[in-house]
Length: 184
Image 1 (cartoon, helix red, strand yellow):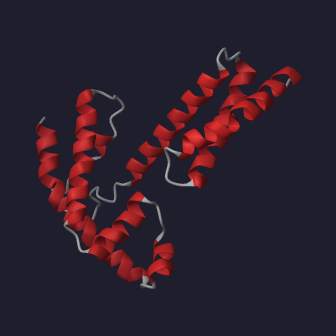
Image 2 (spheres, rainbow, N blue to C red):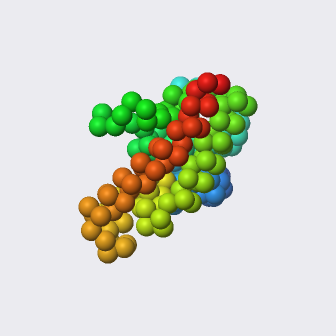
């Protein structure tokens, strides 16, 4: 890498590093996620600086960070599909992947996504506290069953069973929403 480009990267890190990390931290759940995203931003900056000149480095960095945050949230949404049917389930189980993972962002898709999340949280509120907590920790927060077992003192198999009951309830509860959306 030529020295001029290397100096540009070092200057960008000095100028924008703290502010960019703060920007990311406000929008993700953990410091580890924020640091991972920031590292991805710096990596992308290094790759782009070698290929082309960036006119407004600050604006570019914040845009890349925002895109990385969105990508991480989409990935989390993709991972949420323990609600999706498996081979062991009947064919009537709703599969929200096709609806929620559409590429386009239109007012309709945003409305459907917000409706899904709203109904999901209503359905979660109907669960016994132990099932709800295991589902939230495992699916939404990405905590492993082993970590949950350490936190609660419960057996891993008990936690798996609680989550399974939660998933079955959520599938049943969200089935009508799925049917309504599919008709739309």
